[in-house]
Image: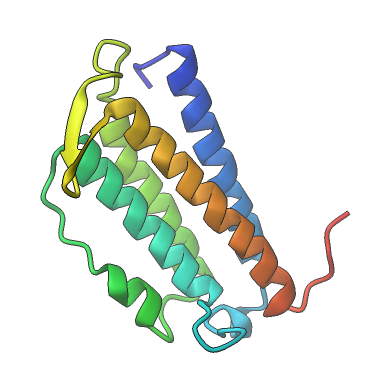
Length: 156
């Protein structure tokens, strides 16, 4: 990645660490429980993975790179079935690879440049850190779903 300055490297490392946490939960989750909601108004792990992928693409392609990708955010939450474990892994991996193209355009020189996204103005730095925070939040939800729906014992 051609953007080797410390804060950027830290943000990308944190982002990838949280994506790995979601992948880890997905890997051990029972296949038959991936699209099970633990309660009314609660998302499944499948919904969560679709939402994380949609949000990353939206914020990096549209927010960071000023693209025009059309996202169906509500479908991420409403769907009751979808890709199996392998398909969800592929979705995360393909989304991360796709976003690499936009992240590779971040430099120390444009780190504080403003981007207009969702009716607000944010510097490039905040676009990236927002996604780090967002993915970390949902990694925590995935860990909870691991116990609620997946029936898996707590990790030491």
